[in-house]
Image (cartoon, rainbow, N blue to C red; front, top):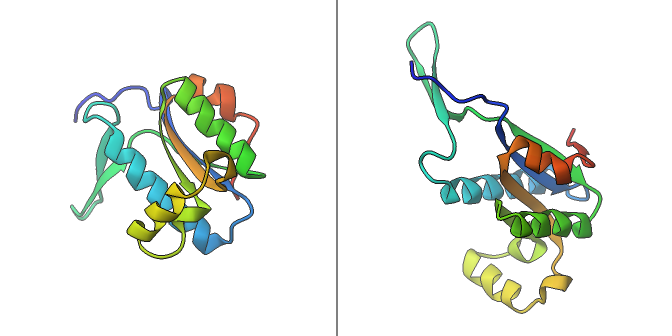
Length: 143
């Protein structure tokens, strides 16, 4: 078994709008997670395999915590996005323009909306725990 870095040094944090119903929240979280993980370099995050007593493999789970928080509204999500940009933190975001139809239609719809008018449904970030806490500590856990 290889030596892993301290699992508390980095983390994934997703902040979701509390105004969404559960099914939509899970869909948004899935899109955010896949999108963010595709941006990470091979050595940036750590993934581990688990093996049960019967020898079955449970592969490729994040060594780092993945925390899900909730935001009251789109503007609070926009601020998380802005902080990520200003601090050069890798992120993904998801807006209401990305919910209906296929990705081509969603891209066209999004392009027709000014950023200030976008309704953010979620933002997902990855980075050093202490840095991320500086601007996410005000959010509560998604329950």
